Image 1 (cartoon, rainbow over the protein chains, first blue to last red):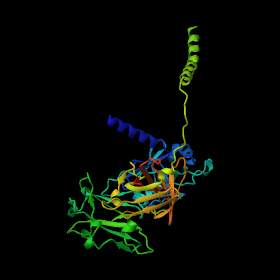
Image 2 (tube, rainbow over the protein chains, first blue to last red):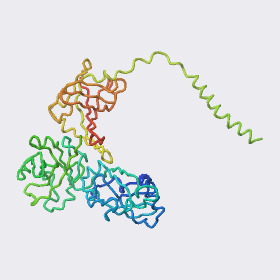
Image 3 (tube, helix red, strand yellow):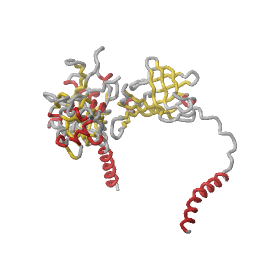
Length: 277
Length: 169
């Protein structure tokens, strides 16, 4: 019965997605994983739909033009000549897709991706093509795709996903996914975090010197009840770091250490707090 | 002929149903006595409220995950955060020795609607904070649930803090 219900739920979600002009799959979405952006030109307004109907020879020459959450890392190109990296793959009818890893494709943090969603449109390589058709530019209307964040399944997860520096922030670490053999199978009282705040391009405020970390209870990650191998630390960044007056926390950098072992060189993880008025 | 009779019956059916409903309604006994004054929702807030539970919720999480973070506010041997609400002059005072203070130290308060309140605004000495009321608070209520929804200017909600108080006085 449960399986049938789940199947029906999945089907209805998929149908919901397919009935929109633009959407992403899978949804909920992991911003660090591969995601397919779909655009159904048949469900859009703008000149492109008519042009593709009148000029089927252009069916495989549709490009995405996107500006949010940021301009794409490889660049949109010019309006009259889109970059090749922005070309969409024709699926069927007037449906197009592009597979991307959002954080690298846009060069943004997961937070910015969730907060802003994707703003885009589909166009021909030359957005000014067929000026005599009388249907405007060779593009769709502007499309906005809202993103539903996926439940985190990474080695490090944050709660809430979008925390400000003056919010409680929890970092959960899944030691089962640890790649460094020296840090695998940590005991319940062996997991510590070296933490520092970046306040400028080259300025940092660390909570404590790396050599002292495993002797400071505030830096110990506690085992998560009912989840073997998971550890968690919760803190209030604005109060936690003794940041000099006039400076603000731009990002939080950290790595795991255990008594008797300091990674050298360490691989820093980064959390960028939400900035908003 | 049969067809015509059947059609007449179809027209009559809804009328008969309406008649039956009116008949049943007419049999109801008349309401006697007064309904009384509406319950005073403002008066319900008057008193001393002590924090019983603190929950953090992520509104951007697909399952709207909540975590009980009471350990940051409630520690054995220490009086938890107290909110003292005075009805007479609509002032409040905060007594807190542990946990992050979101409410300030003192100020005045105001409900958005005295008859059907959905939020309360705390005009503190340094800041103004509007928090949602989780449920109606009547003079007989023993719980006060406040929800602090943090949102950016563009409307993006990043976190919800739920403060569940119990009445101690």
